[in-house]
Image (cartoon, rainbow, N blue to C red; front, side):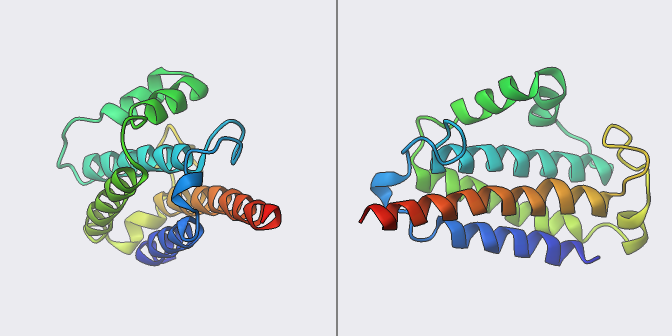
Length: 163
């Protein structure tokens, strides 16, 4: 697998899903459960930040891991509510910029690892000894963005159907 491509294509797909959501509808609930498009964006931004923390730590650069720490210490629903809540006062454009800036940093971090390291099983023991970093970004990032992007696309279709 090519981690650069996995991350690029997931991010590109997500941007395509955001395109065409009218500004007046970004905070309309019900796109994914009670979440709006902006809430989904906030949620995915937290995951992008978490990936940055993982890759930074993986590369031995160290540093703080506030998002990853919160993810490990809170139940999933509370983690998601916390991360989405932290962005409630921001505009969709501000949150999208945060996502894009973080994604750019993640893409730079990807290049610091040899292809063999991406394929090595057990490098993220908390994710599962049988999984590699490649698996992690494919399922937790590419797949995650595709899942939520599809929900946004369905929401856009429902807006078109309403006229």
